[in-house]
Image (cartoon, rainbow, N blue to C red):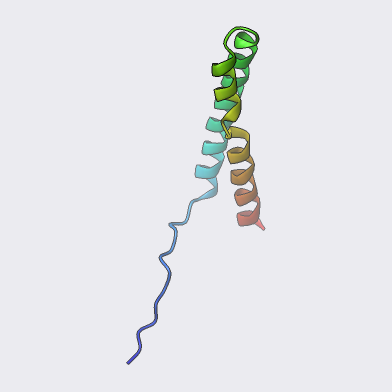
Length: 71
């Protein structure tokens, strides 16, 4: 008898949780922007590290996930 193999499922994340995470990341993004403004011209290494953070990308992915869950 052959058993059916199922891929493990990701737990469902509700829309409120996604919205909360988006809000947290947006706050973090604004904080990073403020730090970049303060550091411009003073600490190029730290500035490059801050710019590498992918906060905006994560926000966009969560928003897309939220949109796809509502449609």
